Amino acid sequence: MYMVMSGDQDAGRSHSIKIDNSSFERVEDLKYLGTILTSQNSNQDDIKGRLSSANAGYHLVQNLLSSSLLSKNLKIKIYRTVILPVVLCGSLTLREENRRRVLENRVLRRIFGPKRDKVTREWRKIHNEELNDLYSAPNIVRVIKSRRIRWVGNVAHMGEKRGIYMVLVGKLEGKRPLGRPGYRWEDSIEMDPQEV
Image 1 (cartoon, rainbow, N blue to C red):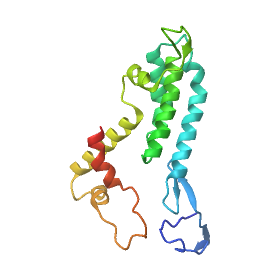
Image 2 (image 1 turned 45 degrees about the horizontal axis):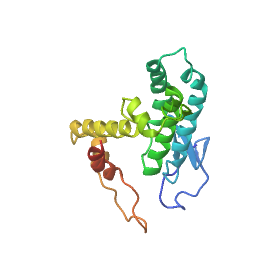
Image 3 (image 1 turned 180 degrees about the vertical axis):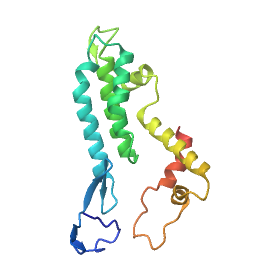
Image 4 (image 1 turned 60 degrees about the horizontal axis):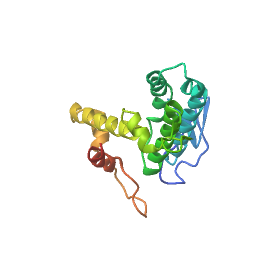
């Protein structure tokens, strides 16, 4: 099995390659080391897969997260070890930030439970601002951005002779497609320190 990753839709249209007696079929997407790669270099399928895996993990442990037998600290540790690592990978567009925050807020609401209103004495859901106050750790978006900053710093420290450094600072050759340029890794590197 092989895949051609190109902006050109017609690149490598042959559907199979034959080497010696082995035949390799061309695919449009494949899963490699837990990441879904597509021939159009889109990561939307990968992000959707990670969010659905995190939701599955949440549904597996939701009874533990709402149990009165466990402390809130233990419930937060369960969240940070079972659900959080699944959604930390992948790109971080504004839409993806919102989707990850929604998932995190749902988990935190399950952990902290409802709150009794002082005036009406009725139970209600905890608001997002109250969740931020109760959950003292940085939110999921801030964790992703701070890890990305740390990774860039480590790569920059490696020096120019390392291949990964060349990938970080290298420029692509050729023409870019028409239309508005997409969000670049370089843009996020410049914006992350200001936000974090």
